[in-house]
Image 1 (cartoon, rainbow, N blue to C red):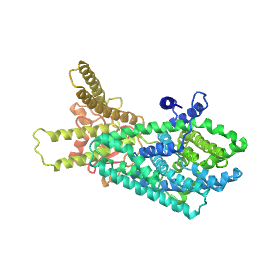
Image 2: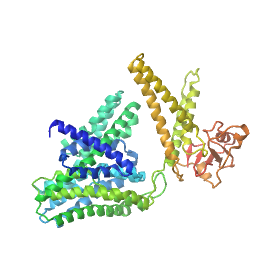
Image 3: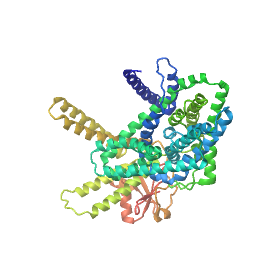
Image 4: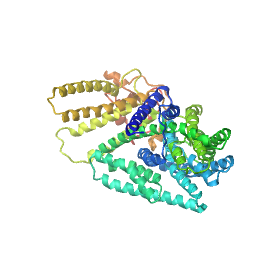
Length: 624
């Protein structure tokens, strides 16, 4: 292919990927599944060029940025809370699958050596870092399940690649079992050290940077530099990238400016979106030439099909066996920090079922030397496992989630947690404001407190307001969006006149864009919360007052007597759990619930709105 042909193919690939994502959203299917099927179909079209996905392109060009993009958005706190489960999956399960599949294919494929059989086991062992989490988030898997799947997929590639390299080395010179363990420890330990070194170096540089463009530019270099440096000393590049990404993401609020964090988040989200979806299209495009090479095989079509299907079944069954054995024999899960409940067996089954393979499996298969016996069959087996797990498990995962009645993350729970967190943050801000010494002749202190209150009121309003009435925050959104549209139209008129410098025009338009995007995000969260019913759970720590006043079963309140007496309106209603007084919330003009607390010192109130049972402690600023 000429340079122009390659450029045209890349443009067509990008357009096809974006179209596939849109179509997937319209028909309600995860984009990875649609793109794989579309890629398989396109690979057999005569005008589509044959695409050979080289392992170097995947392992050096695609894998580092994909891992880094996932790592910087992952929670180090959540990872640490689930570290036993993640390590058992990313190390123990990979070794278990490698051994199980190796024994199976050695028996089924005549003349296949043990090292090559174990090499194929290592190839198909690691689930994909993108497939499980993208599909899991699309269908709304519980966050703990997604966290474990994401943590597993960040590290299991390292285990699989070390196992593959060891098995391939054994085909030439042989290897002892102690050497396998030693190689893994060296690779993992070296990767951790390189990741830590990258974190320390980049952290020191970022503390001295204020330019977001330079900061984001550095972030584009980090995954490749960490990966290549680790591989150069025969350590794990995968571990180095993941460790660096986890630590830099965790410390970003300290190391980076707000502008740098926003710019990095937006840029990496775009890069990850394009790379993730392109990878699945490329997987499908390998189908035609992989199956075409089967013509050179000495095995019958029936045996090849049998080996492929048996391997697919083996990776599914082995994973389910391992996760249940690990749950009941090794992990014994403790109560969730948020819900206070032990995760049910259905969570474990979903983790076992969400073992979709991806591009790393195909790239690793291409590393098998071309003179290896039955190599063409091994490639078909690897492709079958990738396509089979994506289609069989990926398509059935939403149905299984519904059948098992596994709850998705509830936007109302998130709204309650967000409001509580903002309230506690505001409390710390006000305490800092009171400690500061300043000469305030312009009423700045009162203005700051007013803006804090407005932000908190808007967060609480997402939990619910009086039926069929527009909340103050929703009314503010509607009015302000109309005003911003008028402002933008006037600015564009002035731009056309040429009387104001273009740099000033761009700066002012950017200010409006930032405000509009913040309003859009808040409105979207408010809309999502209105579609879900409340479920009771505790946020953060409890307190003695919340323990003294548990939730009560009462009919929803219909009015605030104090508002009626004053001739004012209320937004939402709250009930004092000590005396039963019903009053309006802080988003209401008169804030009678808070006034009641200040007069009576009754510490706990409960929402008196239909379908809500959360409580708030005025004294300790905690929610249950």
